[in-house]
Image (spheres, protein in one colour):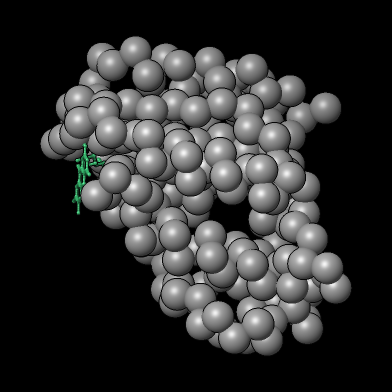
Length: 182
Ligand SMILES: Cc1cc2nc3c(=O)[nH]c(=O)nc-3n(C[C@H](O)[C@H](O)[C@H](O)COP(=O)(O)O)c2cc1C
């Protein structure tokens, strides 16, 4: 059965290295018959979570804050697979991705026990160096907490400027990971 895939892309550089990886992944995933919706979070207006614990009352628009997260919520709910894509910023994910992900808590608030919808997921990252350990730790902890299943990680180090990723084997790995989804 073909899968519905949602990509949360936290890179502000639309022609950058993270997006080159998500583009290769998307090409592979679509070639295998899956549908992909990618959100370029930097183009959207998404506030940080207020920590009010007041969400979850309206499943169609579960957060008390009304902003562009309302575009993401329905796609998230329908998605089989959630791809978290981000450049490495100071040994962690970008603020754009963190803000959006925190706001998905409002979906869990729709459940009386804060249960999260069950998903599969993928981590895609680009960095100048290769210090992905802290982000992997965060991602692994997140998967465990949410009860999600990780399908893989594509971590591409050694890329700083736009275009540095050209010819890197991680592009092919991203394509193959996408293509492996059925
Ligand atoms: C604010 C900021 C923080 C960064 N922090 C790190 C870092 O901790 N480690 C690293 O290897 N690269 C770091 N970088 C470099 C980016 O991860 C790298 O340029 C990456 O290729 C950017 O991805 P993009 O092309 O998708 O924007 C940082 C870049 C910026 C702008």
